[in-house]
Length: 127
Image: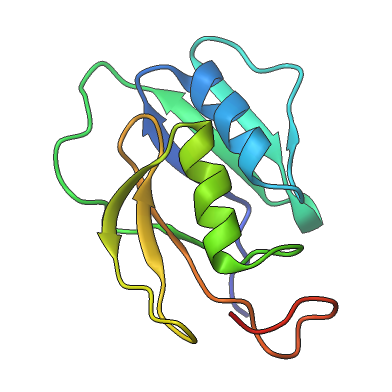
């Protein structure tokens, strides 16, 4: 017997703001209307939620685990531009014309990656 993921938790200074920000980022997650100041969340595919839990301390060091995003309806570079407009910041830019990724940070400094689109993803050319 093995285990399956139930949810993913991230510490946050402002869980509601974090959940609302990530709700704009992820099209396959929906904001949990029962969210509050101490715990806010997004409901994801197959019942796997993304939870933001209130903690008093700020983020100081690099994440030990992070989310990797693959754009569904635009190029990697267009998605990076969209996320920067939402308030993300670039941490490390490893993009090449046909490969690579960008490491960004959300408004509280949690790192995440934006990958290239796979050649087999329907409707979007590799970039």
